[in-house]
Image (tube, helix red, strand yellow):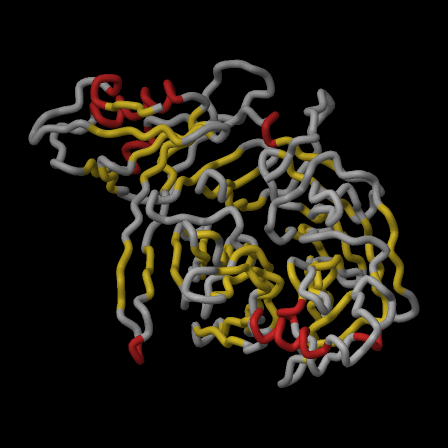
Length: 471
């Protein structure tokens, strides 16, 4: 999540439509709003790697695939329902992957442009381009498109040496050199991708030459999803730049290409372009410089005539009728920075049919109990809540939400730095809180764990005595 070049401005923050953002660096789900940020912390055993592939099934449902899991690549494919506060483990990916992109077309979710592991022998493992895969949303299963692995690819390359005196150079604008009977998507390493109409396009990245060297690619490929058979094609135009893993967003005819890395310096690329795909012409147009290094591998969000590039705390915005980038600085938003959540996540392992691996279903996720301006306000609320109870169980407190609501003020957020109470919301009726799962989370920092100390039939006397904060 690179924001190294950005210097906060003292000018008014740009407006933004609310959206959900999966903060994989801190393992939490953020609801970013113009006037507030609400964070829900995940159970510690659930990991969303920063290099996983992420896309939005709709405004409140997020799909997450793969990512680095220790020394290996994960096969997890997870659906997060932010509104219902649920997480579901879907059918596992056929192979472990990282990076890449997810695209939804008709009833399928396509995984493209990622990286997988090639096992060369019993002692060595090498990264290679991941195979094309697609997920059936109705049947909860993956389809795997088999292509040559890196050993077969290198064998094919070595056989081609000597048969053609001309060296293969994918950076040249010589389309006839691409033999699509042999070329597959596994020949393309770390490209940027975008979807327009019924095609997924591949731009940038590397292609391996005849002697096994990765060289920058300027050719553009497309995968036609229409019909019964997927068709890979070479587009009749090339990119005027080389870039590795760019972030792309696409509308009907206009595509924004930004971020990624310069293949020569291996540093973040400063290039920003729009690509116009029109029946009568194809044109690349330079854009103004984006004031941050956008490295977040998450698909952009379209809201009316606005494109939001999910990132935190700096969110780049591009509007259809404006020529310049806008920045929403969530770090300027000091409202609703703290929230209390109960991580009531229960994992259930179920054996599937045909000896499939167990599918884990998580029934409940981080339920917000309240949002406070400071942890002191959170403590005060918990103290009042506990003093209203005469008896408590060994391992949990049952909150009467109707009773709690009467103790909560709901006021508009102040425009200055006054100490007025912030607006408050309750998400569930009669929410049990397990003593190990109560959190106070600072949006700008790490979660602060709270452990509830309790004895049988003993009343809580003081929030400060009975809650321990681990910094």
